[in-house]
Length: 126
Image (cartoon, rainbow, N blue to C red):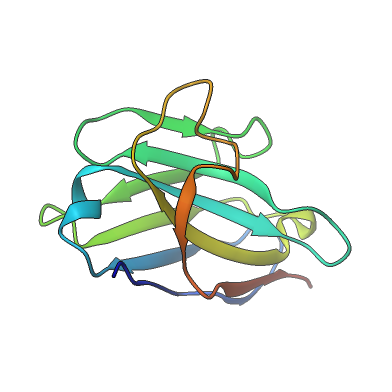
């Protein structure tokens, strides 16, 4: 069974940075597609970023382009989300998720992500 465990959330001031980490337990999902989603209170879960872990393709929501970067370690056991220039509207619970593959047309849809972590809270506030 695939297990995803997020860490790295916290409270940060506007303009600050955080790096979220997702530990991937399954060898299988170290060569698939990994994504980050977020959900603010009262709002729907939305896609933030994704990457093809077996290749180099990355995908970003327009709201985070230029500020967030998704990456992985060489062993493909960790997926990261570097978040810079954080804004109050970035406040949400952030989730790591895995699916078989991703493309421009599919990476941001919740359907298809079969595995989810428990989430880590990010709060951007002064």
